[in-house]
Image 1: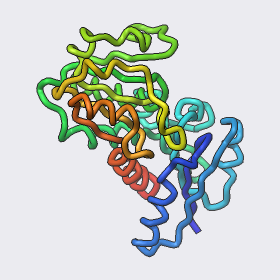
Image 2: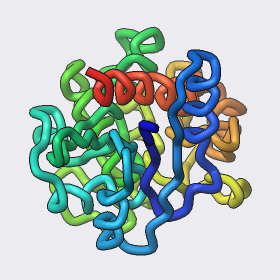
Image 3: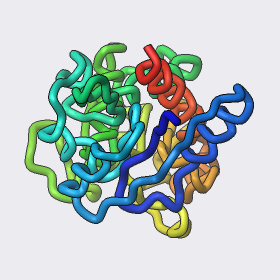
Image 4: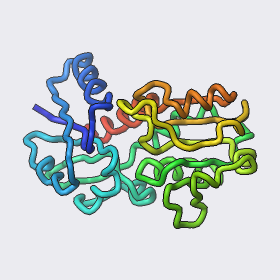
Length: 242
């Protein structure tokens, strides 16, 4: 019986298992889906030896850490430097990035000519896919980090009115505010947001994080990560079954 799964550290918040099990049921497929919670990426070797495993998705915090354990990467995964989808074919483990596809599909209908520059909150694996897409579209990108140490990286207390006047797209790529810690929020000057801003949170559980609620209350258009999840999951399914 073909098996699929999700690899991460804590997966209680994830909808992937439910999403794929519902898909299997609707399509009459005799497949299974398993959550693999790993306390350390070294445990991935045990996942690889799971009988009948065809492929799995990868989530926080292992999108970059898993790369050394793979045999090859798609061109896009190489360009992004992060993997969220792994296919197993004849013992070969290949890493892909479907986050980029999912994010692009999600934001396409919402971009306007006001959107020339973007701020990405966080510098992990998801932020790399988001930056890849935004740059490809033609947006200039700044990163906000707790420990800024690269070009175009700034601390949270550096976000000011001038920066938000210039950057009309803000994307939260951190896990801050994810269920069950739904009252947590990033330090952000919401008072400088306007109706020209597009604020996106890749979190989809809860449906509206504190970051999205405050952004909405200050006039911004807001999007959560649910449609991205579905788009990237369907792309992963295509890869696993091609």
